[in-house]
Amino acid sequence: MIKKFFHQFASPKSYFDIANKIVRPFLVIFFLAYTASLVWGIFFTPPDAIQGNSYRIIYMHVPASFVAQMLFIAMAVTSSVFLIWKLKLAAYVSKSIAPIGALITFFALFSGSVWGIPTWGTWWQWDARITSTLILFIMYLGLISLHASFENKEKADKFFSVLVLIGVVNIPIIKKSVDWWSTLHQSASITLTDKPTIDPVMLYPLLFSIISFIGLIFSLVILSSQYEILKREKYKNWVREVK
Amino acid sequence: MTNRLLFVEAYKLFKRSRAWIGPVLVFLLIVIAFPLTLDINSSNPPEVYLSFIWISTLVVVMLGTELIFSDDFEDGTLEQHIISNKLVEVVFYKILVHWILIGIPLAFVAFLFILSLNFSYELSIIALISLVISNLIFINFLSLGNSLSLKKGSILGLLITIPFLIPLLILLGKMTSAVILGLNFLGYLSLLVGVMLIVSCFIPFIISFILKTHLE
Image (cartoon, rainbow over all chains, first blue to last red):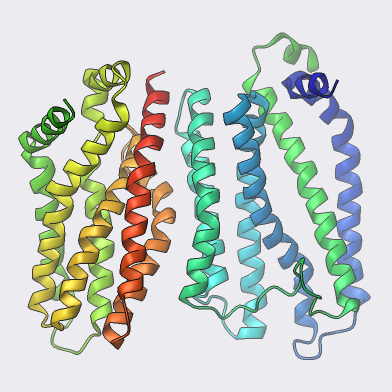
């Protein structure tokens, strides 16, 4: 029963149909939720004791940098599904995550620079977490250009997946080694194991913004994977009937 | 039989003398150009020269491994190796031969440059050893990149594989600063050797998977 569901869901056609039903409501709901979290964070929280009002960019910076790393791991999961079970759909999803990941990583870097000017007095610092985010951004760009450079898209999917898997092994190594090199950026305020070091008044809107941003990016990934399916399967009969 | 394969690979690279003399000469030219653009009499710290040497070896090794698979790919030798199930071995030998004919000469040219700068005896020797070891790692990763971008130029391969080499560069920098400060560097050196062993065990398998996919 579960196996049957899995196989049905994994065919691009039924995935497309299910995605078509849920993607618009998801987009609207999470867009509204993220806007609400921004409004909550910007208008209904007190200013920070040291940073004043400038800290409010946290409601964009933290979700973006969180999602930037999460998307690479999501890409690794779908790539390994593609390499193990040879599901075309997984490769399509994996390929459609990469541009979104690059965009979000760039946004994380940009918002970090904007935040750095009032608080550190500089827009760029050769610091551990910033540098590893920049390397992540370049890795996304390399993967996109790798996929684009092959005419034969089935080969491109395989190379892409292998490189994503090598990359995901390397990301923790890069992060650790860059930490070892030097660090200025504060360490994470919210971790799974410890009590958060941020006041609850600011913590709740931050958590809300992270969750709603993840939802927003998730629905964007669904939308772009639908586009990828239409592009790659344009000679199939069911695609012609979609309109 | 295995020695014969190694001998064939060595002979093929040795006959294409442009492929292994060229990178060494280019590296020599870069080394000559570096003191011309920097005031060599002012007291620059040794790290400056060493980081310059690593980054230029990285680029020169990229040039040297650019054609590592393309000739065999075009004349069908790789397909023969796939059929006789010896692809992983051949890839390993190719990397080894490139290390012997390109990597080690580059390390010695760099060593001569370091000797000319009158660094401490210990630092020069450590720099030579670390260059010999790290060149093998560079050749492994850059041939991975070049196997991906077969017949497409090596920019794509460089774009993909340099991010993987960043931890190695950080390790090299940490090791030399430990030597300069007089700290214990043997831990870093053994970590470098460990990275070399792991990389040269796993990369040939990944490269042979990529080459098989190319030939499907």
